[in-house]
Image 1 (tube, rainbow, N blue to C red):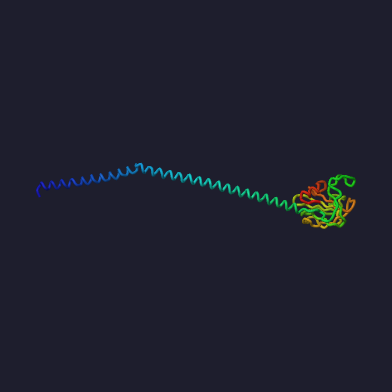
Image 2 (image 1 turned 120 degrees about the vertical axis):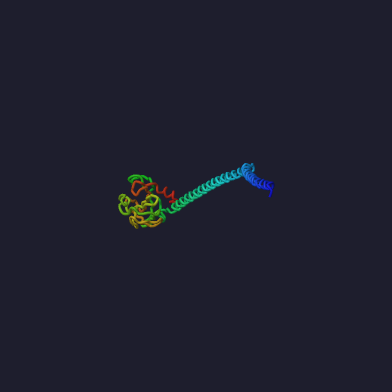
Length: 240
């Protein structure tokens, strides 16, 4: 090969690597520029903003739903409580109505009302403390309501000889009832009695002008705490 041809060959070979390097650099630069351009294109920024807005909207919607759920739960609880309170009040009213109806007169046979509560006269040391039911000796005397016998016996069961044989019963509402001038006592202290149960027979014992039952309603078991028995029974739907 001549020197001239050899030089030509070397020149061609030397040029090609440089061209390849330039082309490679150009391609890499294009890729890099393309990446920069991609990040800065307006369309891509819109996509990012849209995604952020969607996340915010979802969060706000979730919070609103949570608040609505909490409000609904609170309303439900309030409704349930109101219904429970209403049911409790209705039950109390029904219990009172049942209790009121369960009171009865101490005498179920025929009777005549004689000495009344608050009467005065020589027959009493002070005002009359009960209601008298004139009935024959041996008439059944009933407990006006269920309760427990707390006093029973002669000498007015501890209230004095004027009452003769007597019984005092304590009822669940804290009221006490007394039955006096009895000919026979059929219960004992501590015994439970039912409404309308026969507890004694009427008589004429103690300070009595004739056969009758002396009936009292008291706030305690003892003499001196009597209230109007007719008015009390009337409040419990018992007419005498």
